[in-house]
Image 1 (cartoon, rainbow over the protein chains, first blue to last red):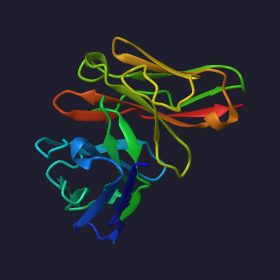
Image 2 (cartoon, chains in turn red, orange):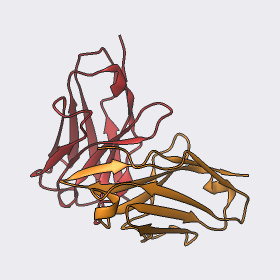
Image 3 (cartoon, rainbow over the protein chains, first blue to last red):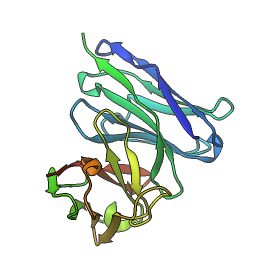
Length: 118
Length: 110
C-alpha cells in the first residue's frame, strides 16, 4: 500500500527556517509529481508547492514564493520542503501528497504540524 | 491564485441528496478538465472522491458524482449517510503549473 510519511515539523521562531521531509514507499516515486499542501488550524486546505516527477518543474503558491523551496531525491524516495523566513501565518499541518494521472492528489500523508511562534 | 468559491455549509437528512458548488475562472475550473473533490473527516488527511471532473477512484461509492458547467463544478452526494458528514474540498489545475483548492464546505447530516 502506498505510504507517505512526513517528518520535520515542530515549533520554530518567526524568521527561522525548517525543513520538512516526506518518505515515500510502495510505489515508483520517480514516476509521480508530488505536492505539499497545508491546513492552518480550523481552516481549509491550501496548496503550497508542487514538483514534477523528475524535478524539472517546480511551482509555488504566491504566499510562499521566494521563501519556500520544494525538492526531491528520487534515489531516496524522499520529498522535501525547505521553509525559510517563517511567519506566524505559516503555522499549519503540512501534508505531502502524490500526484495522480489527472492532477488529482491520490494519496496523502498523515501530516506534520509546524508552529511558528516566539 | 484565488481560492475556488464553495458554500461554507450544506446539509441534508439521511437518504437525501446534497450538491456542493465550486466556482472558479477560465484560468482554472473553466479552462481544464482537472477538477477533483476531496473528503476530510476531523483530524484526518483528505481523501480523493472524484478526479477529472466526474471520475471515481476505485473504492469510492457511486453515491458520489461530479459534473462541470463552464467555470463551476459540482459534487453531488446521493443517499446521504451519517458517515458522509465531513468537510469537502474541490481543487483544480490552474494556468502555468499552478494548483488551487476550494474554500471548503462542511456537510451536516441532519
